[in-house]
Length: 385
Image 1 (cartoon, rainbow, N blue to C red):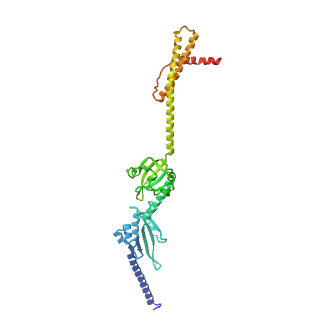
Image 2: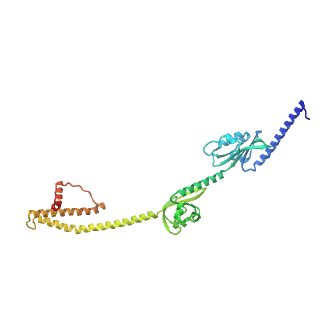
Image 3: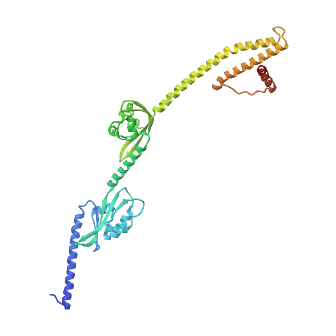
């Protein structure tokens, strides 16, 4: 009954207390229902109730290795401190406890476990009943596989960028099947086909056809293959290439990265050098033959000229005048000079063969000057006239 006396006030207080007890019983009943249903969830769940009750499903306990002693303490704050000791923010930093406890904007945090390669998403949000907040829900989801896929996709894009920027032809080959799984633009240009028509083909269809069944890397167990091989383009033309092969592992699968450069121009340059060498050797042989001929055809008659001039100077051919003796002396000196020049020319072949030996001699400078004077005197006299 309503009233304004002390009995009515007491009755109102008792009714309010009973209502609060009924609400609390309903909350506890709902929490029991929630706790029984948490085990069916694939995510790790922890609920921190306002009445100091902490609920965790087995998934949450396993993911964060929650000990029985920590569970018995019934403290969400200590559980979060334990989680922070095991995880980081991925950049070497530590996650702040307040960031994990914040629930106003249902913040999501990515946690990287320190002792293994697992990655978890951490969500926090309010637990409501009849519009009232009765606790906080913490949810942990294992996103390791998602992160690995993202990392794999990122690595794939990075690899595609690197392959596209390389100035040599590159193909990526499945080590198990020897089929081409990727090719860069230079490889497309050298083969003469778009990537779509290269991918899926056996690598020996284009590269090293003679090595089918005896691949140095796949079949013979070599670590790295660097050698000259042949590339066959779409028209069947055989292009000489310098090839290098390196095995790599992508997502636990082994691939071969084969890079190659076109040696056509180098081979043409080598052929040109070989032809030039042959021409030079032919010219050298012709020179040697000429020198040999000159040695015989010039030195023999020149020795006769010098010899007869010396005989006449010595008076073995009869009396001669001083003027004739002077003229014969000039003939002898000029002939000997010419013979020395011929000998010097013949010495060139010895120098080229590396057989010329350097010898040191003393000589009279005055005599050398006199020889030069006698050689050029007729030319001077001729110029005067």
